[in-house]
Amino acid sequence: MKRFLLSLLVAITAISALQAQPPERTANQDKYYVRRATHFDDLPVHRRDIIMLGNSLTDGAEWNELLRNPHVKNRGIIGDIVQGLYERMEPILKGKPRKIFILSGVNDVSHGVDGDSIGRAMEKLIVLIKQRSPRTKIYLQSMLPFNTDVQMWKLLKGREQVVIDGNRAMEQVAKRQGVTWINLYPLFVDKNGKLREDLTNDGLHLLGPGYLIWRDAILKYTR
Picture (cartoon, rainbow, N blue to C red):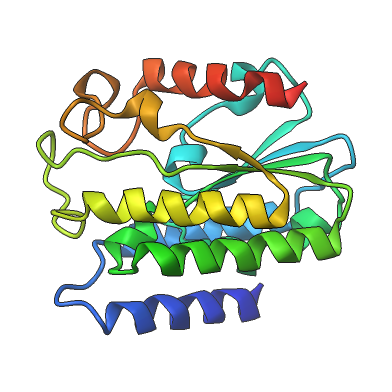
């Protein structure tokens, strides 16, 4: 875990150095990340489990209740990037879970990463899962849109196209790697290319009805 946290800090620092402005992270967010990551280190994963892997969007849901399945386990952490998922896979992969659902990338977008780079990072993660747990079924989900009209996320301002580019790159990754692609983006976007205002109260994270849409989109894959 210490090696993982050091690697993640180096990755975030390196990305931040390329930006005009640093990522909007607080000391409390960093503490939360460490608390949750170390907690996951000590929680077992079993062969019948379905893992929900991602950032704050995944973190924010009670997935086992939404999907009515006690084998669904939440492994989302606020603020995570794709490389962060890669670095904390060991406790998950040693359990050889039945399925893994991945949703990540918007924090990479806010860190100044382009769509193709997000695709490459995601492919690296998928290759790791396939190598370490070949029987695990992988479901790669698209990034959701965001809406800076609802609340200003200054590091996302004007970067809507990066989400589109990243989703396109990840769809190609899914095809190359033979994993299931789930395109959530059209379910959440409005006519202006932004996250629907009725599904969010801050332009990035989902309200309850948004999670119901997400649940309905993946439910058939969790059986």
